[in-house]
Image 1 (cartoon, one colour):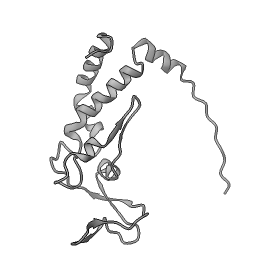
Image 2: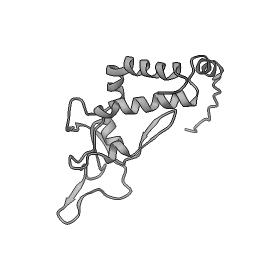
Image 3: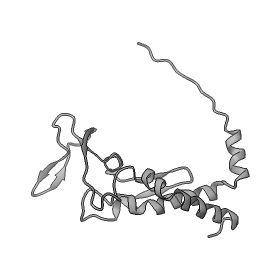
Image 4: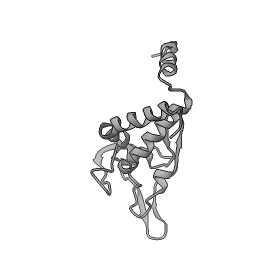
Length: 153
């Protein structure tokens, strides 16, 4: 079966007008994204290794449009499910002399087995979604104050 190309054009003019009317220029949008990141901290898993607390949370790129966790563990942690080698059905191998390792260049598949997070139930999968359910009003208020103050905290 041949694949077909699909072309779509999205008119963003009304969104751009909304952004302008409500003060969501790049600076305000970046402030909002940074607030989401900051408020998500207590909900965010530190890493898969209890001894390794900060690198996952700190290894992040924040732009006006998104928060990108750069760690190789990010997909594991976001889904909150064990991912395994499709051939061996193992999450990782262990060697006393080397530690944990996986076969190189192997894409893992998602299972339905939940990961156990230290600091649960606060820390866990889909952390920004859970944080937003708890803290959205506070974030909206903080961002509104930022906008009202001309982009100053």
